[in-house]
Every structure is written in structure tokens, then in C-alpha cells.
Image 1 (cartoon, one colour):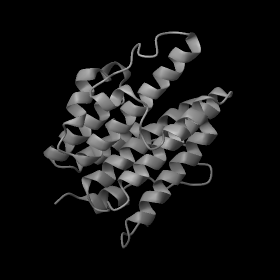
Image 2 (image 1 turned 90 degrees about the horizontal axis):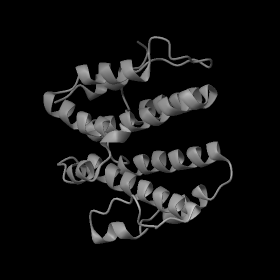
Image 3 (image 1 turned 45 degrees about the horizontal axis):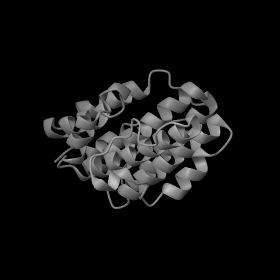
Amino acid sequence: MNNYHYIVAGLPVLSHDWNPGEHTPESIRAEILEQCSEKDRKTIGMLEKGFVDENLTEDFYRQALASRNRFVRDYFRFDLNVRNAKVRYLNEALGRDPKKDVIVLTEDDSRDEFEEVSKLDAVLHGKDILERERGIDDLMWDKIDEMTTYDYFDIEAILGFLAKLHIVERWYILDEKTGREMFRKLVDEVRGTFKGVRFDA
């Protein structure tokens, strides 16, 4: 059994004027990894690999979608759907072949058929670049919530936290105020989910 209770309890305490300081996303990820089993570290490694742009190849997605871990499979299926939709949108805007640079693994990947496609389409057609990015990340955040609805003391809950942490990290770079707000929301969410755990350390 892993130390999932202790992982959550060890998250940084955030104040109103929170600043990463010593508790950067990188250090938090390292602390989580230290408390996980070798098996869980490998699963986390697969997730983390998908946050490096040059890794997002057809081979990577095939490997991710064949993972034994449900969260990894579902997350990267949604990630692929979103990325393909973004590529199609850009192709349309630039007057290019709509299939250019789209990653197709199955017959379904050749079409924009997934539950959130209408919401994503509305976001992509927004005029403000930052609002578009925030809208896409909000969709990802909500999808992570959906995928981990019934996950509490398990690796899926940790994977969901780490996926959200990457969203927070990106926004802290783009907009410090938004990043702080999202990090506070993330920690509050997780601490509210893990009932019965003391967080007064």
C-alpha cells in the first residue's frame, strides 16, 4: 500500500499571497515520487513524458493508450482528441489540408467525435489568445475531475493532481496571479477530497 494519505498531507500550506518559493511544482513532484512505489513511479513517468512537446508522437500515444493504468489511457485519449481538434482548427484558419499533422491511431481519430468537441470548438474560435488557452485548460481540468470522481486513496488521484499541477505551472509562467489562484484551488480540492487526513503540519 502506498502513502497516499501522507502525500496529500505533505502538500504546501498556501496563504492568500502564495508564492512558490521553495515549494515549486518541480519540488512537489519530486516529493511525491519519493513516497511512491517503483510501480507507481513508472506510471507517473509515463504521465510526465506526455508533458514534453517533442514526446507527443504517434508512438507515444499508442503506448499511452495501451497503458494498464486507466487514468493514463483516458487522459491521453482526451489529450489526443484536443490536440487533433486544435490542429484541424489551425489548418482551417491557414487554408491547409485539414488532415495535415493530425495523429490518427484509429478510425475514430479521423473525426472530431468526442463529448466535449462543441465546447472546445467554441473556445478555439474565441478572439483572445489567453482566454482561448484558459478555456482549453479549463476543459482539461474538468475532464481530470471527471476521470477521478471516485478516486481517493489511489494512484489515479495522484496522477490527476500531477496533471493539474502542470496546468498550474504553465499559468504561473503566463500569468502569476492566475497561477497562484489555480494552485490554491488545486490544493483545496485535493485536501477536501481526502477526508479524515490532518493537514495542520
